[in-house]
Length: 317
Image 1: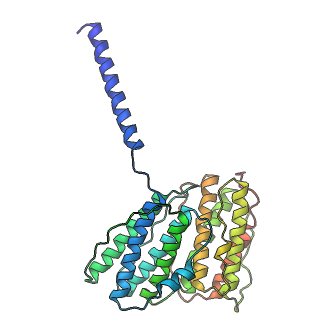
Image 2: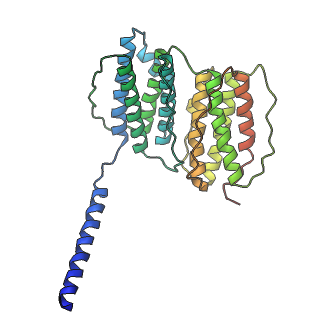
Image 3: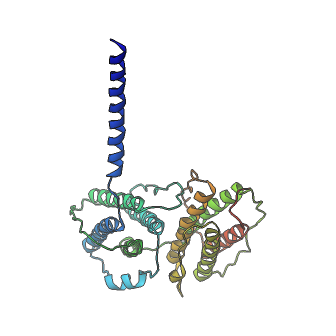
């Protein structure tokens, strides 16, 4: 083979490699972009599944009252909806436990600065799979629900429908979150804050606040809102898009409402972790606790408030 032939061969190999690269890039470029409309379509299938179970068990369900009670009127982010799917997965575990099925640890993800709808979509598929498994094990005839197409849906629409589903699961489970469940999630906040403080080289000399035996969910709810306010200040300092949680306020919150606010704290802390470089620190799963009281939750959340109050900058020292 002469020199000219060798050059031609190398050129053909080069062109072949370029074509492969272009083909791969085109495949990525044409990959389906998941929108809030797609997510909402799947959430509505979950809604149909839940209503099917309500009807199957002969449970009364005031659909309109729940929607009115759970609707949030503020601009939300996909990360907010993702955290609500986590809450739903915990309630599905309660359902599993009530039928003597082993619980499945809810999935956790790495901190993401700007979570997109794809991640919420993935969670809807996990929820649908869990519901299908439960129906199969309970010998409930499966009914396939076809997705509908929607337009102009937002993360707020997705969250509100998920909020409705979560409340409906309380009816199926015949229970709401207890202080023990809330305490487990509050400990996850404690773990996140401890990690953030260590990473920022901030000395933590805080100690638990005094145990207030008469503490109510309202007091803990207010503490949670204050923690969210401090997170928002840190986010604004770091130019992170914030969420206005003022519309989440309630006059008479119960432990389930506190649970939701603790979840919102966890959601927002992920942006802080991502911003400072803690990309691979996944919030530990909740530990199971028993016999915790509102006072225990209140004490821990006020301690968490003390811990986050130590942070005045997100600059790694």
